Length: 384
Image 1 (spheres, one colour):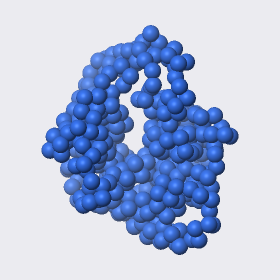
Image 2 (image 1 turned 135 degrees about the vertical axis):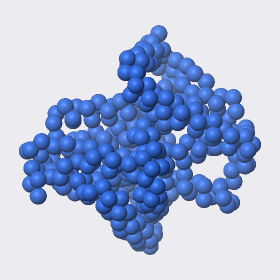
Image 3 (image 1 turned 180 degrees about the vertical axis):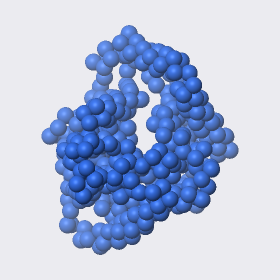
Image 4 (image 1 turned 60 degrees about the vertical axis):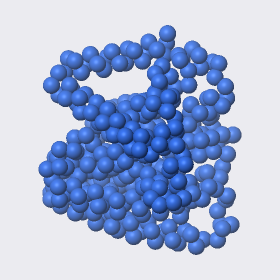
């Protein structure tokens, strides 16, 4: 297929089931973070049912979110008649990537202002520079933006992204066995290694983002009634491959690979997470297909999943200049109170996103004023 014959990107309606999946993953993430942060640990016994199942499901929210993010990024990619992505589009994606990374660091900023960073201890710097899902999304988007600029068709883009996903998986045990903090500065090493506390380094979590990008071109340009069915077929074959690969990896001789954390970085558990996340995505897409009215009403919130993510973290944990709920009731609530807190946090977060989206659509000057004033307040707090 020549670049000029690449299929046109689908209409916005074709993404409804993907936005619904992303929204569902975000809703489960909100309740998981809320219960974990506010409820006394003895009420959440992860070794017994149903909390062991709850904990396992929580582990799938990030892979689902990352895969859908990679997939949607391909569907929104536009190329000219020569197969090139316009420079303005590439610039927008680069700005978005760096913005995500900056936001990730801002949420855990360890001082009241930038000038106070000179007093930060090595342990404080280590905690500040740990990589979470926002930094991972930004770093992955930088890589995928570079890939988009170097390729001349979505087919080539998808195939190389699939290769990146496979290479990330295969290299993870080897990468994690190296002491990257002796090789790279702390802030860069945190993007590839778990050793200093990063929750979502590129190895192995970048695999999910690249895998989503690889799947994206399979859905691009096909009729809307076929998109969801093809997506489920991809999930089905992917589940079989992931579970088979996980089983084979478990049979490998223990000394074949360098020592590494089996739960966070091994082929066995990484593929097992993928094999659990894919059928969940398929079931959510089936629900979305069979409830089109409900899906159409909910899907717009999925587009604003970043606002939901940031909003609920600020509400729970606060910022250097604000107090979150954990400042008063960190892991001190009973289960009943914790469930009410889930409703409170979810209601405020999702309600706030709906309100902001309505302001953006119906009161553009107010929306601009809110954005500028928020940016100004943050800049003032960081500087003065």
